[in-house]
Image 1 (cartoon, helix red, strand yellow):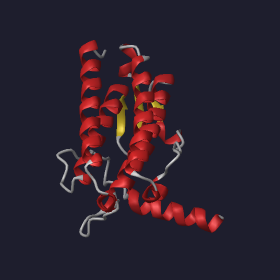
Image 2: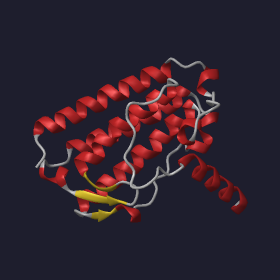
Image 3: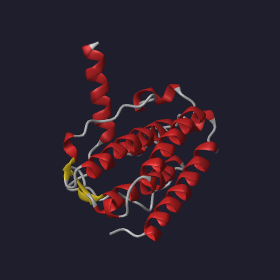
Length: 188
């Protein structure tokens, strides 16, 4: 069973990493927010604005995964649909850093309320992800601040000290996203 100290540590790390992300984003000029690293691969090819939109999308989707695991211990998360947000990655470059930070603020407020409503026993519920394997609710929630750390580093143009542990190889989310947008355009 999770302890109160573990939950407090989780919330503290979430606050710290989100503050570091916000500081990195607030330091960007409008030009910097749209810069694409030339030799990057995968998500690192996203602009800072796309990185921020990606974090919004993933926070909302991770929240859905957490809710699924809370509702049914051992839930198969492959069946939980992607959660749309107001500013998706493909529209991020038409938005401002401030707009995306406000969206992140709202997503985090929801996540904090979700955490506050979880019993200590329920932090041990699991969800099975096709990309990460089985994780407890506490592990999923820890991934929120690690994800912030990863993308804050990318926004700052440096390699993150955190790299997710995928089952197999990391999915190329950038390429998959471009393909999704192309299909949506074809469908009208």
